[in-house]
Structure formats: structure tokens, C-alpha cells
Length: 113
Image (cartoon, rainbow, N blue to C red; front, top):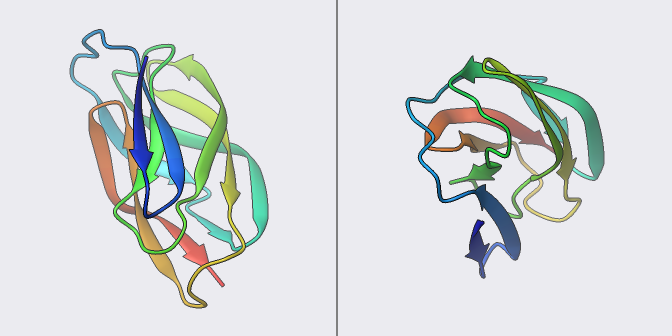
């Protein structure tokens, strides 16, 4: 299993297994926002090429990154998860890229104050 340590963001992200994941796309995340200090269950990520054990995370935003947990492979086009939005950070809207395996949905998730 590969992991990414973000010292400045104080986060750890599981990147999944080292095996090839083929052609992966991410088309949407629903809901696509969360408020600081909340936990959002039953979040769905839609796309293609998903496989069990695929890494899910948030990157390229500002402040503390949202945390993906309880990631469940539904099928090759859907993943469900829980997103925890940390309560500290800038008191303004912040955009985060959503990563699933090698695919990136730019500015796909908004953290609201």
C-alpha cells in the first residue's frame, strides 16, 4: 500500500495498492461541498475504471484537507465514502481537487465556512 504524507497540511492519504489501475476518470462527487466541522456520510463519486481498494483523497486546496474514510467500492463507476471536513482553517470557501487513483476532478469539492 502506498501513502502520501502532507506535513504542512497535517494529513495522511492512502494511495491504494501499487498495482496498475488502468484508465480511471472522475466525473462528479455528490454532494460536492461540506461545511467546516461536519462529517458527511454516503458521499458518491462517479466516474469509470474504479477497482476495489482504490485510493480516494483531496488535494491542492488551502487549509486542512477534507478526509476520506469508509471508502466502499460499489462498481466500476461508483464509490461511496464518508468525508470529514475539519473545523479549523480559513473562514472562506476553499476548493479542493478530488483524486481517485490516478484520476483527478479539479476543484470538485468545496469547503464552506
